Image 1: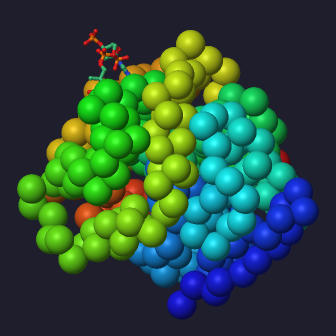
Image 2: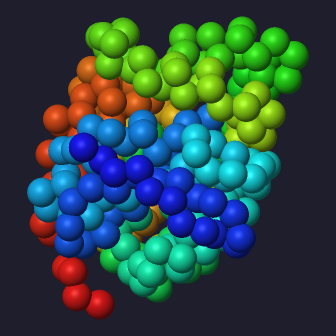
Length: 258
Ligand code: COA
């Protein structure tokens, strides 16, 4: 079972989940989410890695406010790594978390042994209707996001945790996350990424379509691309076995030395 832990980042509590021992793999959740959305990876990869999944500021058990800038979350993540005594890690991120991971890879590449990008893109424009509804009628906004988020082949139970997290995250934090995504664009900077990289996308992803993953994989030198069948925007929950197998093979291929 993942252990719930807390440390202090810039004077405020930061909550995270941790399992396993060995090479640190830090997994960052997406917009309106929380670390527990990586539960299948926290349990499924703990035999080969020390898996750590923080709650970003304003999310889950971490205090403070959220942000409307991916770069601010990325700076917080660097302070989280410092506070946890983690020098170099394999960093994974989903959706907005993938935007945060790309930003770290561009600006703090020396902290990374590897990069795992799940259901994300180098640019994350958001449908104006999503932002409008998140501002004015949050439940309708969340319903619209859900209607686009999963593969038609996904069992509702497999993604119940996403629905719960989205409902429990403060509405202004979720709105801020989507604004942060909408402003995010590192398409012109990705050639600076040096870390070995794995890109994963659900074939039925409509929020960050396969085209975005193809761009990441063709622009980041040496990146591998894995498409997961019968998965939408949350392959880590919709098809955890396939996702874990891809991550496992990637971790085995990435050198542990500096
Ligand atoms: N990787 C590769 N190509 C990308 C990209 C990415 N991350 N982001 C955009 N592009 C491409 C688009 O495919 C498009 O190419 P085209 O002109 O050949 O069709 C071009 O860049 C411009 O796209 P975009 O910046 O998205 O603007 P747009 O006005 O065409 O579309 C939306 C705006 C909101 C309709 C569109 O971004 C979309 O459908 N987004 C997905 C839904 C969503 O809200 N996702 C939430 C993300 S967190």
